[in-house]
Image 1 (cartoon, rainbow, N blue to C red):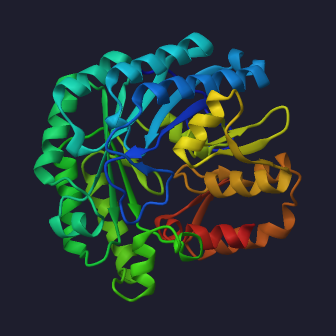
Image 2 (cartoon, one colour; image 1 turned 90 degrees about the vertical axis):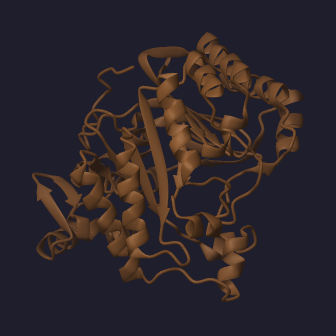
Image 3 (cartoon, one colour; image 1 turned 180 degrees about the vertical axis):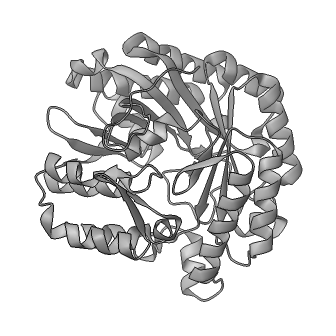
Length: 401
């Protein structure tokens, strides 16, 4: 499944340059911290949704035929819970994409799944359909943390899901975790990290729980509980300590940190995620999906978040966009610099300024201060955050932007 992905000259990171994100919105239950475009459904319209996303792809290709000729290097099925989708429909969609787009050799094809929806037959079906990277949303092994996050699985289910993935023959198994949860302790985070590496995954993503109250207060139960004082998140210093113990445990077991929240064995980092961090372009299909294309005018679009509205709009032959935003040099600069600084390899910050017509000199003194105070290192023109700097990534970006 491997091939030499293009190396981004500004970061030195191997990354896909053109990808496709496909959003599957259906879940059996909605997690209290989730603000993604998801819908709780006991009966999923599997065939209808498969037909709809291919119809959307046809509409997008009709609007921009040049997309057919760009080599597709990564494809990511996220959600929601894509592992609710029967393998036969996943196969139909992947075959439809292959018939419509130009596929690069060694295409990375990822699918997100939940441990409670794992069985060897279903996973074998996904593998036969062409999935070569399985990402399991574990979040934690601790019963208390899983309860706080509204998750339905337990640690034994995670073990079973990884075993099923290995039996199905996935060359890459990735596990996702969350820390900084209500009631969570440093010892529990370390125990999660040690149990995670014992499963010998090829990739680990571990994120600090964040709640953007001004955005999410009306949409997530967790944010409302926090505002009412029913829950509290760990102090910032405790969250930083959790991040450090995760890095130490993962690093000691051969999973190198290559991005603020991501670790991988050598050569097995996510090329699709790296596409976002290195300024690549990507189609997006499905309910609530966000895409970014760079030609003829750089723009970002967001699809309708209601499944029924999405299905009806596509079936009527119209693009299901809720919004579209043209991106100018300043917006592209801000995104390119902040995303590049998430990478351990850093970013050629002067080249980013030059590419998007932003002044270098007013920022040089701030870069020197970051280096002098141990928040960053500089190798030639490439600026990389230290672990101390990565812990305050957002604040550093705000100063540079």
